[in-house]
Image (cartoon, rainbow, N blue to C red; front, side, top):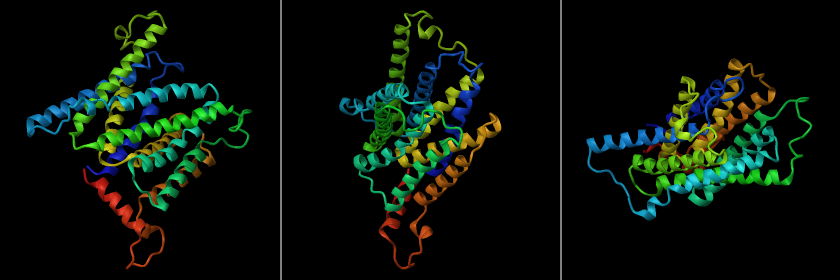
Length: 335
């Protein structure tokens, strides 16, 4: 399967995730325990990966599976990073408003590119770095409010702690993604076996969160396993399946493409969600949204197109940047 098909599907599913989550609300709230959704999504991903690995067993010889503890022990780390990241998110929202938080969240585009270079040793051309910066600018532009809509607390009026926590949140988000890519490409283990390890620990950590919520509430509503499906509707199950499927696609991109492709997919999904919301939820389009979409499309073309399509170059001379991008595309195309 070509990486760009998976990236397109990820964009569509990520866009529909926010829409389905909104549709699952009742009177502005959730009748179900939203903390159970990530847990069930992890169980879904684990079940799918186990089934596909079993099917692989039936059709061919034993796939490569590293079971040494020193290797398996690396797989809880992404879950731990995401756990810390979630807590930092809540702490950040104590200092900044939602709009400011969303805009600051675009920092993860830049931090992903930086960590992608530092920890994975992937060299990006100057054009690609410019494209990543443009992507961050485009997504930020699309989220800015128009004249007269700005709140009394401006973007730059939050306490310094809020900006520090926002930057930390962006770094943790990028670190989790880059580390996951490192794990998936660290060896030639079977893809489904790697997923099983990731999702087993993911399910364990999400279960621990549910137990912690019960302890904090003094088990007033009873243990989580007795009310796990309370309030669930068809739309809620679609949220679970969508979230699980999105995770499987991200895992595939980490194995056979890279974090930058994932960043572009999720950024485009955000813009697509805003556009679809115009028709579904009477969302009022703004000039900033249209400008943001144009900037992001320019960034997309600049990052993935060969330099010869962007600048005039002699046909007999191939620049180092063109060779670098062609090698990158070839690597993504080979699963």
